[in-house]
Length: 114
Length: 114
Image (cartoon, rainbow over all chains, first blue to last red; front, side, top):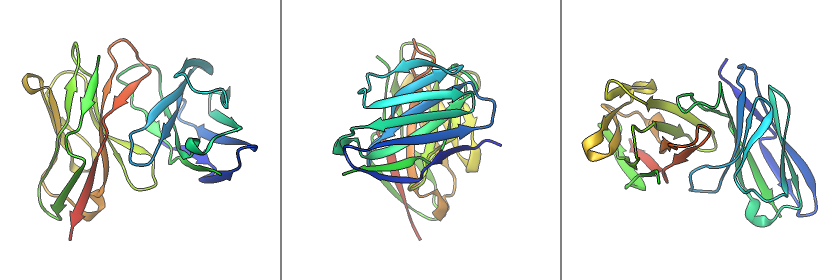
């Protein structure tokens, strides 16, 4: 099973809302990632978790708050977002933080902030 | 600094025709190179990757890529495209001093004519 699942598929939220994105993998991968992808652009790395600890925060605003409750699950908590945060949010996982390792991507959550 | 360039924003080929997508990289050492494909509304899927060894790399879905150090290129090829190959293709490079981050090119959108 090489699947990364993400829920919800679509999300519409107001700027005062609090919502969460969920990502799950059951491949035994120990590295998990959040990417943001704007329309017609490549994915941009936001956060990296390794062995359930935050490894990298790519200078992401604090209105995005990641959480890794266990080795299979990765959440992204959203609060007070701006319209420019509307994008496709992709989750990925890999066996470890090694360049050679393949990153497996989920289908993404398409977020619209009104 | 490492970087990757995809010179073509859009490519249109007829179904059954051959395909070559260009990728040029800038890297201080042996590069870690990847090709990913993203179908509309989907996450990314790895087609192939190169770290060392044979410079002609075979991937999934009938794709191959050739690493040419003298030209700093890693072009993706397919002998005969199918309508289902219509998608966005991203070339990516792993960073020299980080194991947790890959840099994506801006992507090439492939259109298939029936």
